[in-house]
Length: 396
Image (cartoon, rainbow, N blue to C red):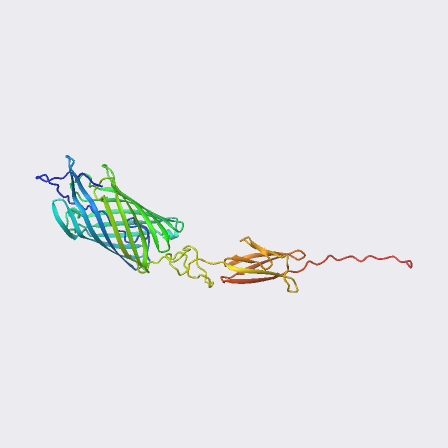
């Protein structure tokens, strides 16, 4: 949550080091999480945009040897403008942070621009086509900020690996791990490091969900401060999503705030995933991995409905056979004459039997309709022929 910087001026006051204590970077195209990146690949030539507003409390604090506490940066109100463009497997992104308000010890409140960042994400394996999704991300930030303590003294490079997976139809898991190369700020704990993020998303309804994230801000020889962030998301309109979250630090370190609050709007105009290719986006589809059937019954919920199949077993005279029995294979659905079976569209083997009739086995096609009737005519078993015997008479 806080860190002893160990930097003082000649007058004994705390000096603000040339580093960027605001580590949060809103993910440009993640579907379920706020910070953790995923391997999502939008359709080619897609424009993306997000606007994030946030409040951060105490991301940079000095602990004196005399037990004093100085909040070098105490409050930040920030807007992040993030945009991107998908071109084949590559997604190009740009982040422009704007500090609407910042405050801290021994200085007036300030506002200004932060460090611009460019990133490129390459989706190597799409999770829709494999057990896991895999992507690589490279981010380069530039010291364009105007506020000391919220801008690095030089360029910062991050190289990150992304692995994610959808577990069932509601749970999503993503892992980010990367290396961060920082300019020298004269702070022992502000050095090149390895960082990581672990995010879990849960889709509670078709248009909303929850998320939880654990962020390690950088493991060095002096420890590894981290942060937890919980949030949620919902679709406001086609292509427009709202996201929000709240978090706090686990341990002390630069960039680990006592409180973090976030709200974001995401503009994704063409990215409406449809994994089962039934014309309904996953956000509107109650069965996103099973295609809808157009049978006139609840055709807009995304789930196929079974056809109600009535089987009539008749004799040669067209009259129903009372004790007839049928079974559909491989479904194993069975019934008696006149019963109705619920089956999804496809081809089945129908076996029909009745006492005194020859058994029938036939391939039948069940259509994607509301109801269907199948008539099967059974042939009576021929009676065994009685041999004629010769009768003796007296004339013989």
